[in-house]
Image (cartoon, rainbow, N blue to C red):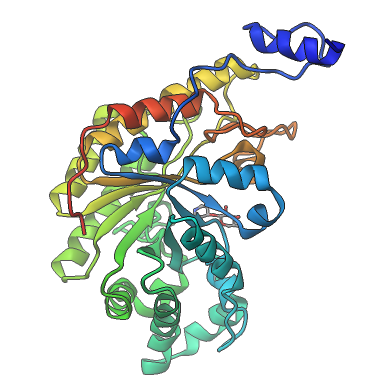
Length: 380
Ligand code: XIL
């Protein structure tokens, strides 16, 4: 047996990496065999999926195989953001998302649409045109795009993040709405009504989500965000805005803010009590600030992932869980300033490691799906 193969084999067998730095860290492999995460999610009537980029599918067949093994639904990490799809007025480029939706259809996967109306990632021409627009011309800047995108994918994208990240209490508004938002500045809160009514008319079969982040932890920051989003939902539903479900992004930060099961469960119960569905739409676990050593870090990441999913899946209104990426090989956590490690090492906040091996987090997610009680049937 060649030396390198012997070392690799030995390292895989031992629970502590060999002294030599030449041997890559191979964490103890929990039982990570068996069906993929979506197959396990389906047992309780749910779906599992992940955010991907068409370029990953084009250049990385091993990653593509991992997506097909684990996921039953996909979402666009960036290729359905408006600065990509409408770079100039009246000029659309859906080519990236066409590849993703074609991939999903070819392999029998579902597809989400992320996102139609967001304060961020808008093309410069739109941010420049909106403030001066009035009446129908102004409305069409919002509804025209929704109609164009949703009609293009009607019957192929089953659920849409219609409005993304509408609240931001730290921007000073008493209602906790996001003040620095071109849509709120142009329309007031009514942009949400207009967006959802336009979406419902564009594709009556699609499930319509309002999504946001910072709803998960037991912290002042998240409590303020939960309060703002619940009040927004109450106001919008009282105006009969056709919102079907709340998307909780699930970007967890366990080494910065505590996670408390009861706090999160109470919030999910309030959302379900409004008659809304729930999805975890962008789950990942920022591990910066955790142990430098991989084994304890992986273990702590897996523990909070399990606790979070156990609560989410205990609620019958939760219909799906998507992670924001599938493998540490492609994770925005490793590039986004707030989350990336100063030494440039990859974050380990997704179910598969950079070599596409199932990590402890994968095993804890699999266990959560395996233990999940049934989801509510027929959720719109
Ligand atoms: C991010 C993507 O990961 C990046 O690739 C892109 O450049 C910018 O958007 N919340 C969201 C997502 O709703 O759309 C963001 O995705 C991450 C935060």
